[in-house]
Image (cartoon, rainbow, N blue to C red; front, side):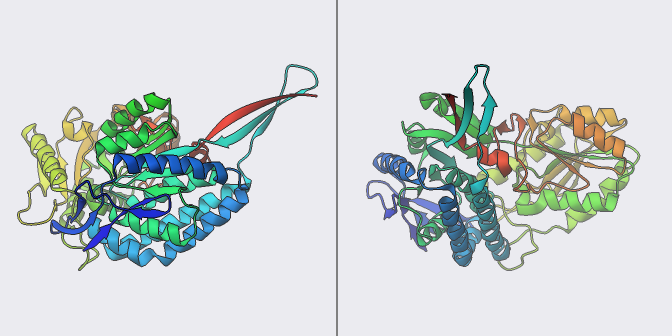
Length: 474
């Protein structure tokens, strides 16, 4: 069993005054690691150290910063076995998927390193003669990064790589469900020779997280998490009037039109809904099928959902792994039971497994109505409600009749339909004839309660900057 310490100002520090957190394997509920819980003093030291390190980091040329990011990416790949092993044990993912996540995190780090020569300001015409207006892009300072449990390796680098290339320092709180992989990443960062204090990674309870987010030197908060956590971040941001970038809940609709390739749509949707047991913010969470193809599509989806079996992916990678916690398992089942009580028809799944592990079967519901909780709230589990529509405009209205607007999907061969949805869907992303995959050169940003700001691409990197306007008479 591994025992991890916090990585603060280039040192590995424990806390003798607090009990360590236990990390559980969701496959069998056994304890696989312990992690030290940071103290208030350690959180303060990390934030103060990050502020000192950032003063020197921002003065380095952007191309120097890029070279350090490339070394960090190389180190992530060199440490992919250790990172992958830790991630597989704490998440229930297969070892192959976990190692691939480390490699993909290295790729997003390399991508952001390429922005070194592309962080640009502007020259703006002045209304006064003999004067120039010059807009500079500057780092925010110290950024607090709060990382989710579902893709904790990729998301950690998705946050800190753009923050670092823009000239910031970071303090990181990984999920208490999946902290082991974060500390293996910290080892890779240390091996790459990153300056001490520039990246700090700590586990902590809610009180310490609040102290981190409200520390006077923290000028930006970035979170991937639920709406409740997002509201909490906005409360914390009030203290320092800190900038926030929040990716929150999702409820991706998939609209299936009569011209769609039903076999492809069914395969894609089931894969999306059951990958990592449905614990993906952009996974398809509701399907709207035209009445003329509804029954045929339902049969195809049901066949593929029934074929998905749960189990330990360490032994068989093509199985569907567990949910993150027993609480998540219980919540998922309660939502299914409520939908059935409200009139939904259970096509397959829906049974709470007995024994160890946080497993839940691939579950398909038909006869669902728009007002039901199963349609209105994020499930974050392998449960798929299917609804019917008659007119395309009705499908668009149903898709938009929602609190979330992260991603959306449509299957059609009609370019007019594509154009309609491209102009009218109320979501930050629209995928045509495919399911979401968050290309890191794009911009991953939600509408409505799905968040503020965003990640990825040029615009995601610029989230970690602020502007200074210089007025220059001559």
